[in-house]
Length: 135
Image (cartoon, rainbow, N blue to C red; front, side, top):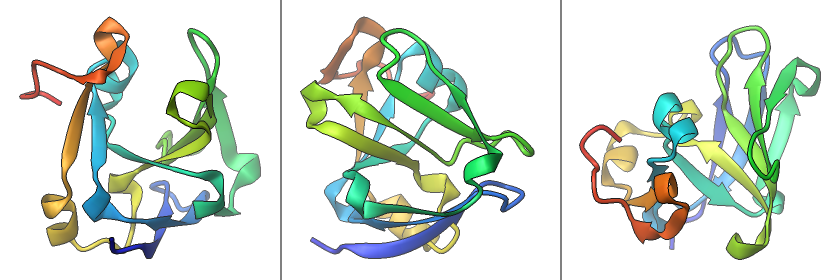
């Protein structure tokens, strides 16, 4: 286990954050309609592993379905660096950080990070998605 503190932001840097992440523990991609369209690649954290440093008032929000997730985005540049919510099945409160919004992560660390492909398209997130090529 290699926990590191990374800095991250949206494109225009109105929203900045830091997060304690162990990339070696794995990242995730999902094939649901929302994640597929966003090309979501994230890591799920406990809320105490995430600190919003700036831009709370620059965040917009999108919700759908059960409205248990808050999909946050910068109202200026449109980038969605993180989301948060509460889903009992994954342990309650969470923050999902987009790994490509980490500003100081070496590319080699991202390339080495394991990726789990979840089947959200069929509401079976605990199962591996069959198609992975476009995720």
